[in-house]
Length: 116
Image (cartoon, rainbow, N blue to C red; front, side, top):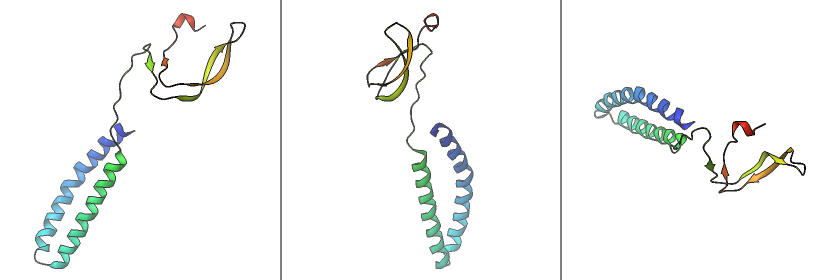
């Protein structure tokens, strides 16, 4: 989700920051002459800083995605609990079951001809 959210936030900031900067500059020039405007400007800058901090926190840390081609095995980094699996019963027939896949196990797809 963050791979969609980050470009969206960047685009919004690219639109808002120049407008806010111009408005703040105008108010700063006016505020140099009037102390009340100077106080309001300081409050606005503080709010804008908090808003930016919240935006960065909500976007989270960027994650790295690695493409795994179809048919390639992968190794589990953590235990996956309650996975629905097919196991062979005493007659060699597939039977539905559940199990935990422990960290470190390899997972890979079955060959097309052996899925029957």
